[in-house]
Image 1 (cartoon, one colour):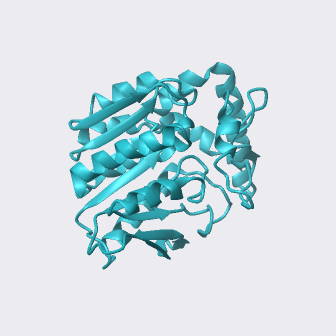
Image 2 (image 1 turned 135 degrees about the vertical axis):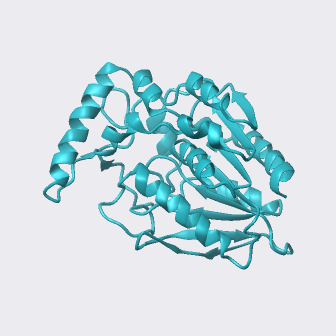
Length: 292
């Protein structure tokens, strides 16, 4: 296989992308991938991309605006609206690439982007298949799941950033922390699991503008589930401390063609061994059946 730079423009800013191409395959189907909350494409996703590419799929892996090698300020800004725009523009870019089959396109998302791929597939009926692992499906359910104390602190930080933004400022909060400290993700195991994905030498900083905390309760990909026409693979973790498993189960019931796999695992276990190999093989089986 080979990996080449393949950047695109989203709403006037450059988004950085990697295009993986399998050797000896003419016009392969393509899997479009992006990471979860405040993460960059280098955070463990190359392992998935390389496995997919080794089985005959092209892969397009990209960073959202404001992340990684993509343009945009302030850095690490998480915005549902902007990221969904980036998904739409990434799809437009991929469908124009002469190296791949733009009519056989699967979306792959994880955690926060697991919600994005559900929304994107509902909006774009040309999508051939979707893989959503440990997906964020309902901000309202997640808000209840995390508890009243968390919500109060999140509201205070979110309002502080919203006010700061009016004068060009930014109020940051940690992306991950241990439970005794506030962060967007501070449930047991979140800090260790998340930071284990950050590669050595990365310039990524463990912080993001707090304004996203005001939006999360209102982001509900579950509302789009019934509009998805393509086949969907959902892999979720029964021991997830960030995304309520019951909410994922409820969302899958609204998708007309869904294969659902429940794992006895935590949120971050899907990225690493011993579970990684099992997860990627299940995803490959699904992709082979639906788009290869």
